[in-house]
Image (cartoon, rainbow, N blue to C red; front, top):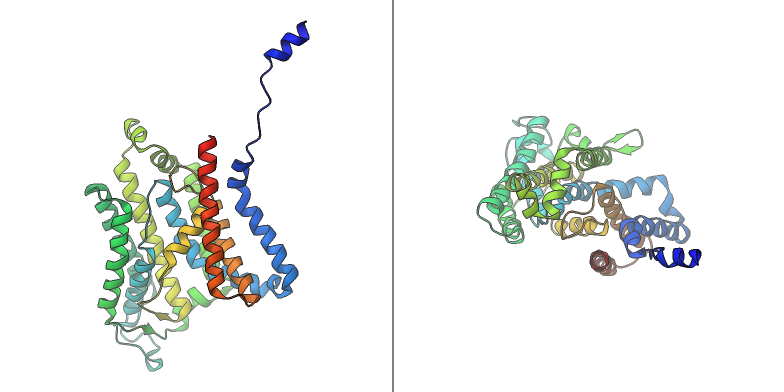
Length: 339
């Protein structure tokens, strides 16, 4: 009798929510599976040279994605990062070479420029300013982030064309090119920069008060406000952060390509947002993190590289990435409904 009563009183076994596990760890599992498949089909995929090439290719996207993670965690979006990257790269090149008309190999030196660190500072400064302006429009004018950054996408691209007169600025010295093309040991410099900032951002979001405030604002802005948080200041700060990464990425991309161009960064915002979402950061804010973002960006890079080695059309590659984005958002919504 007692045993029967105890059996009735015992709570039912909790059903395992596999969708939650898939949402959190699925991207990493998919990345591992895809790497194994490509390694079997195309042995050249796992060569040291190719793997570092993949990391170099995703480093620019990765830096932008680190900044985008902060924005999306607060329920925001930034569609302007590609255009701001282009403008920042052009400004950095002009500062380094002393003007916008130095286009040929005959002017490969610094000319009357202001040096490397001034160029880096100019690129980062342009990015910070762009992020600040957009953040102020969102927090003070109460214009939705989608609209503000959509306007920024067009405005910054137009500013890049106006600044350079529609011409690229190319051919830099080895000092400048080192940051995009150089190696420290076997590791490309952009990869070291990307992973360093990713580690720093991970620590900030996971272990600092500011990181907890970012999650709080994204989870419930009104509750965060009632708790005494300055929601506008935190929202403004994440757009400044993503502007910083856009500026830094603009410099690194110009260094890697040995050219700063008006068309640099076209479509980058979609790839970056895809990487963040695939990595498990919710478009509805408050959930996700840097580790997932790194995995998401690597997944896109590995897919692109592996399919290219297999001679798959770039058009099909875009279809594959698009389907993965839809599936990732579906999982996110599925988990939220079950919770």
